[in-house]
Amino acid sequence: MADHYFSAQPSSPEELRRIRVALAGREVDVTTASGVFSPGHLDKGTEVLLANSPDAPPGGDILDIGCGWGAISLALAMQSPHARIWALDVNERALDLVRRNAAELGLDNIRAVTADEIPADLSFRTIRSNPPIRIGKPALHELLETWLPRLDVGGDAYMVVQKNLGSDSLQRWIDDTFPDLATHRHAISKGFRVLKVRRPA
Picture 1 (spheres, one colour):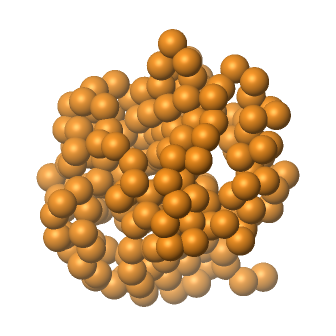
Picture 2 (cartoon, rainbow, N blue to C red):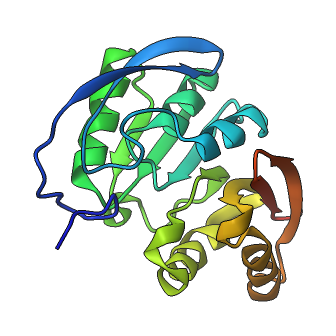
């Protein structure tokens, strides 16, 4: 069976590579590898999310769902050095890359983890995600049902989804599934929707 970026242990050769990307207003060199999401460049959806969501809160716990090699987590950590960034993925190779990139950039506020390494009682000031749409709706819904309820009161989540991959139906599902959360379309760019989900104070 071929590797997917959501394989826990990719079997393909690692094939490390260096790419230059713009994160949090800086041009930085990062390491990526085969067997992870978008290894050759900053994914367009991630680029849209970073350009159309506010800077991270200055402190507290922040979650990046499906972190890949770490683009969103690294940007959040640069914006908010006093916050604690939880970079979540199932892909161990991706988590190793996040740790490597964070260390190289001098960012000591990122925790690259699988779900069982996040304390069960932890809640989040904000959640950011370019969610793994290609895992399929049931798995995606289960993922969001796990993490969206853990938003702090007054906290928010920003997620980017390509329009033709179901952004509108996902927004309807969130509205139906989480009546205590307020969801709206925050931005539209390059065929993507940025959805904002907020837990009202």
